[in-house]
Image: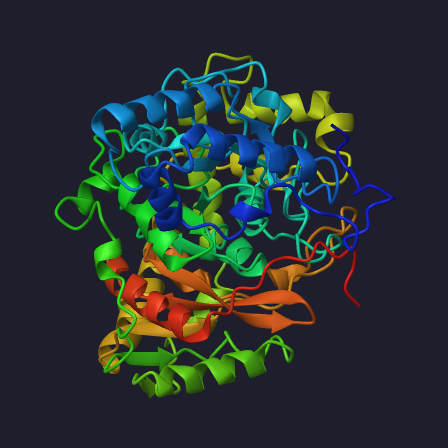
Length: 521
């Protein structure tokens, strides 16, 4: 697969018709209704998604959202159909096709590579906990989604959505625009109806930003609510696994299937008694009535003159839905969090430690960060045609997690993001959640220069550094490009955030189907 694959020169969105339009915008609930009625099977549904991927991933608009499909997907779906007929469905994900980001281990015929050629000769020996949970819920693991290679932590000049294995993923609203990252393919695939839902991972922005850029819902859970065991890491203090859906309800269903205490992940121990297997119980179209919502303006407004008017209109909608809006309700440490070098220091230390631990469990030629760097150098033409690996080399230079520099940086981040940051804002104004613009319009893909500094703004930082949850919901469109709005809360406040996000979604119904335009402006 060419690393810089372009959409077909003959591609014309006006003449393009994606197959199986009947499943576009299909929801989990509607799919289950049809399967229960006997007019749809899991095998039929899986086949339709596989055919849409074949028509749109490398052909047609060449979205490059899917890095590989599961050769066992139809067989799995057939088995689940027989089980449904014999004993009924296991739950709401029974027979539902799900894509997984290519850093989530599956012990099957698919690879798990973080988009890198370095792991192409290696297979995981066990499912990641979240993959295991999806199988237990009756989901069909449809394939692996393309991603920013090594979760966008290989280079400071990377292009979001590019990987050596998958090429450059594209935004389905304008093919010249970035899908953002690092869970690029997961968001693009859900937006383009190549899967019903998908899983992504986030360290800082890697679920929230691509969800907004691709006009879908993304949930970045509290660190530890979903296990990271079997997930190729960046940093254990911030990494989280979460769902993408076209609706809040679909994302909530998927999140419930992922939770559970996992002894392989220390952070997951904190979720005991604080997680749910059914988050749809919190869907409440009237949840904004009486809710106290704080508008966090400082650093999260003013970076996009095109998107800001949508945010102001959204604030008016919050009020019209009965919310008590406190405006502004700034995070006291917002500027300090944006400017501190402590985050990159923590990520570099933890990347070295966590990647070494993960790679040591794989059976291929690359068993450490040092060997990964050497592999990239030896295969530079394929692995580094556009940007290098300065972040990996900087991580390799860091020492153990007992060093004072790491401990001091981690303490600073937690202080600024938690007690003096998000929690301070929530407590000072007695808030249920903070409301922000998720980010600006998607930028143009630039393989030579990489993403713009700051990625065009974004609200993911405080929640990422605190390890707290954040949900983004489609807000509207700017020049044909989606914009999202975010709700942020304290640790394990997913039920409240899901309720608020659902009420906002139902009040706005802002999601718009992609147009696959070659360019915008």
